Image (cartoon, rainbow, N blue to C red; front, side, top):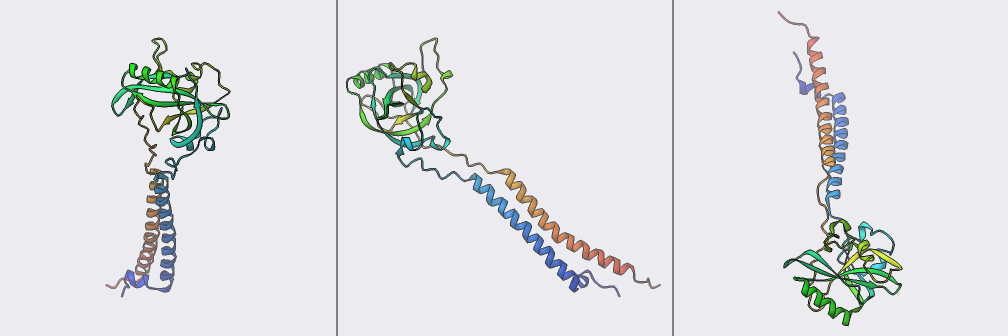
Length: 251
């Protein structure tokens, strides 16, 4: 009488093999779980404290590029504006639509220069009126706002005398006095002077896309775990087929 496959599988030899296969499958499953955890870890936004106001000099220094970790950070810095160094940038979008930014040149106590976007105006006349008021009574003291890296100068149309880019290197050439040191980024003030609207400066958006490569690896480990169990079953069945093939055929 031939034995069944499961009768062969219950033998101590194959029970031990099953335990080994389950241990291997558990290891593969654990690796798959780790890969999935890695994919979500990579997808989670970085725990940046961009909405906590910190001193500017703790995240960025003059004459240095703006670190990635400093982009979009709310900062505070003591500064005084330089009269006559105000500029108007066109084609700047705000809640009310396209308009103009009024940009100022601020000096920190250490003598470093900082470009500051003070506010938004709907028309060039409104921007000009705000600049005249600022020249008469420029704000000073502690500035607070969102710190961003410089924009590219190539966005401005020099031939037509139009400037639309918040490009720090370009602004340096427009300031009356050459600065001793310049911050690589600029500040969007969180309070607009009279005659200007507050510039919309939302918190930075971080990338939350899943790491598909980690997901692929996780699927591979699950397949390997299933294959370990299948291999045990295939070996048991092979042993059963070999055992039954040795039995003589009764006619």
